[in-house]
Amino acid sequence: MTRSIDVERALDAYLAPDGDGVPDRVIDGVLDQIQNTNQLRRGLFAPPRFTPMNTFARAAAVLVIAAVAIGALALLAGPRDGVGTPSASLASSPSLVPSPSLSSSVTPSAPPIPTLDATFRSTSNGFQIRYPSGWTVRPGVGSWPFGSTLSPGHPIADEIVTPSGPSRMRISIASLPLPSGTTMEEFRAFASPYSSPFQPDPCPPLAPIPGPLTIDSVASEGASPQKVAAVISINGCAALAELGGSIYDIEAIAGERGYEFMLDGHLSPADAQAWLATIRLEPASAPASSTSPSPSASR
Amino acid sequence: MRATERAERVDRDLVEQSQRGDREAFAILARSRGDRLYGVARRILRDVDLAEDAVQQALVIAWRELPRLRDPDRFDAWLQRTLVHACYAESRRRRLWTVNVRVLPVDGPAGPDEVGAIADRDEIESAFKRLPPEQRAILVLHHYLGLESGEIGEVLDIPAGTARSRLHYAHRAMRAILEADARPPMAAGGRSS
Image: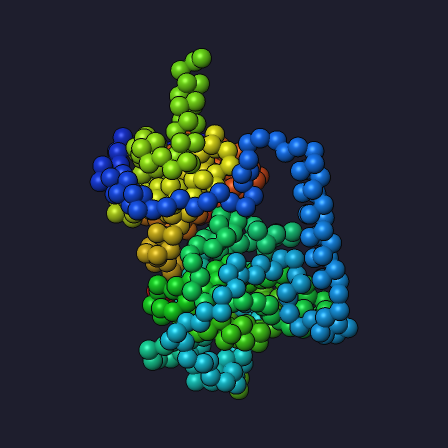
């Protein structure tokens, strides 16, 4: 008998049906709620018709779609500001997922982030970041097990947080070596399981980062051998944790290392962007396997 | 027409009526699926109150978004997916899983077959609750609903290979926790979050 079979048998028994039914009040509550809940209209990509289009209508639709596509291509290919200079953002990365809502709403109580006049360098997680001197820095302890999910303030993550006050903000950063060929989707599946590929956003964002997002501007300019892919998984959800405010969850992959940046607390999308832009990814400096951290902080 | 075909036809009719705004039809669907949904939610969340909230949330969302379901025959997989998302939301909201502060090796060294000796439901309960919700969900879909990788992929809207991989990692994580719990206590490096 192998361990695998034992675990599966244990789970079979533990999760077996036990005949319990849903309380009537649950379904009754649903039926009460839907009395006052309107249904959404059929989605853009759902088939609104059940009768076939005639040839003329189909041809007209093809022409319209082609015209729109050509127009979009012309816009993309046309002259823009900054042509000829390298982009300082990752906006052109196919892996970058901008916010589904580009609302410019800002957390009302978010004070501006102080001057980022100190540097924290984490050799255990392979990055460095600027932060306001005087803030509390807590290096992470231990290594991030592949397949597990962290949360803001998790002890494995390096943490930089406002030391006190009513409107605190925090960044928690962890990384781990990824098996060669790990895709962003596979990484996100455990790093940020509440978002894609399970769902586009787990909540209505209050203050989403509008993009473009810059992480490690050196890499984005192509001056580094690192190739950075980054996504915003959770983009401005209400943070119900200890700090309140909003929460942002960003994953990046560089040098076969997966990074997770968790911002939470009272900070505006603009400050979140600015803070993330100070990050330099140094995957080569991080251990390939777990070792004790050796962070350093400097002014 | 066989009984199962008739039942499927009735279900399809109910889904289509619900899509057109028929609340009575949706009530029949909700009552017929309620126990199963509740069973899944209770196992993922390990909390009766949270499970009730998740089921309510899922059904209300399902009612609201039902017109966007393209294929009525996929109603059950779609509804399960909606429920799993609701469980994620409940779990995240209550942050039940963040209490795990111990560093647990996923690939422990080969040793005695500790797991084989485990018969204590409390140990399994304790280990299962420390898994992140997406791993709990995939284990529930497999061990409670009896879904295989392809069906899990359909529910979670992911490729079957990805579902198989996640199921493998979930089993591995569960095993790692059980093995770690079976070992003598080590110095824990961490703090509560």
